[in-house]
Image (spheres, rainbow, N blue to C red):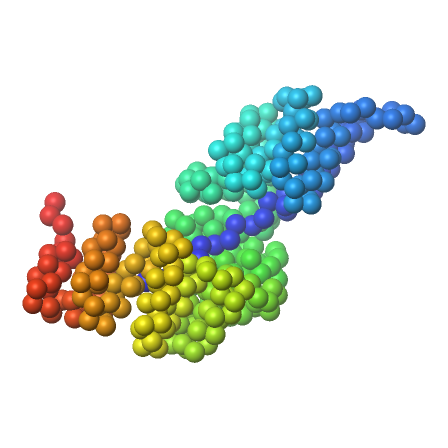
Length: 344
């Protein structure tokens, strides 16, 4: 088991066009030809847009707030505020801004889409899916909404449906490296490794050096038993982004398959130092401790793994990596009790 990276959420910047145009229309209503325009909500919206485009999300948030002081129920300002708060990772506040905007303008596709993005980040996947469904009812040919609904379906482990959404998004935007990356993940989860590899290859042609794509291509190459190529991808990803826990875990898997167990354990140790609750790193280290006859350490890691996630009980029951632990006179009976189905 290993830590494949979750699908990337499409950037909210793709929403800017529609509501920037609305801000310009609002300004046209307030300006008089040949005169200095007064400070209006539209002025602040336009300034907020500029901050947002430049990546100054706090500055954008402040400008949208000033627009709302002048016009408290302006859905454009509320929408912009939601975007800025989302980028500041203040998701509950972003959701509140979107909800208020939708009370005022219920069928705004961009706001509904933004609501879906924020619900996704809050791990409220069923609600995010409902939001994307509504957005796509209003506009069926939106590649961003299709991509992000695919991400949500992926998190719900509905991989075939996710794949259909990614295919639809790529029909509209064939060379988007993020969508290709996400489709590669769905194909991986469907065990269609050759097709996943093709998507990661194309994504990396379009955006060379993307550490997420390198990490997941390495994992895919590992499944295809092309271990040296997998290791090269993991190494490259870690050169670009040192100390990334999932990449360390994936490299550990590849090193394990190359029977370089001591190096793999070093990677799992590093991943756990960076992210102590990394379940795959802990379980995989338990496997290697058993393979290298470090049975007490294997037992401790496995016990902790199962306490964190009961699915590891089922995995360990059939995992040959634990044969040394299973056959140990002292720990073997304890192992069998640990991995047995819990009584109702």
